[in-house]
View 1 (spheres, helix red, strand yellow):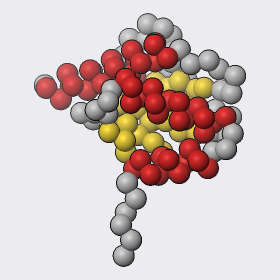
View 2 (cartoon, one colour; view 1 turned 90 degrees about the horizontal axis):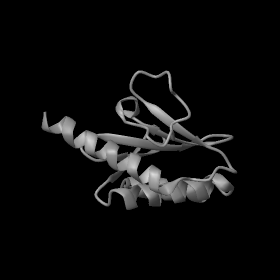
View 3 (tube, helix red, strand yellow; view 1 turned 120 degrees about the vertical axis):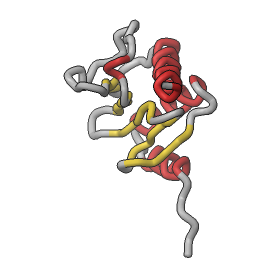
Length: 126
């Protein structure tokens, strides 16, 4: 019996299979996530890269025309840099849709990820 693949291997495979700009963007976002929180864990849920620290933080998925970062509790995060541009009507989540020509505001995105992780820490202490 084969050993089950660990989540990071699924994410590696997905990035490799996306031979266009989406694979490069997903690899860059993955690095930004880990740079923001070195203790964040990679998970593989719903055929998607999911990042967790004291609970689910965000998911990164590739779609036909964009790469989406979905913050599970994004509606309760301050979006000081106006990064959220999708899912704005959702009760809990918020998303950032990235397209091929988009520039990523790395410092602002790192701040948003760190805020989401901090929010999970506060929630788990209650």
